[in-house]
Length: 279
Image (cartoon, rainbow, N blue to C red; front, side, top):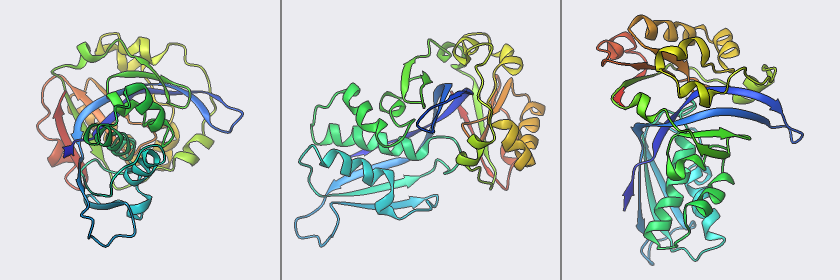
């Protein structure tokens, strides 16, 4: 059985306060985009010699971690504490780039929970699956339904975004990921938390033409200073006609939203991951 974990972008990202537990409270709008990994599971034969109950193979884009440390395996092990799960083979094909702010690993974990729930007929329900997913990462719960969501807390408290689905349907999105990594931990250390004048949820309900002047990602300033190429990509996306461009999450993927399909993204960014998708 196969399922296709999707990526997400952040439409605005504001760090509003530091918590007593050392984490930060944020406000953002998570928006799913049609960029997918592929995840397949099969029953493991009783005679197959394996020391692990979830045997994972990862292909496609390289992932810098031991496969038993992958969030897909962690999702299996999390459910296995409460449910009797059979031994399985799992194959994860990675297309969503890692360390990009696109939520690929979180999506893989959440979709593994969804896949096990459906394949093994666990009948967990979305609310309970979100609680399981939240144990694996702050943004994992979003991917259980993968619907546009306004996220607060550490990204784990979700509410309907009430848009911008109508605003973005039929638009195009360009995703550009250079070969640089942004340390999320260091990015948080460089931010002074503050409440935005206007919530990103309210801004994304407005016409997209207003976003450039009001919708912000608090991580961009430090990331652009450390990696000027990110600022250059954002500038080029606007040059090519983007109505709005921003870094997703803590980076390092940049995205631009276009009314008409941009024709030169792959040529311009030929040395980078570059995709154009219809929303």
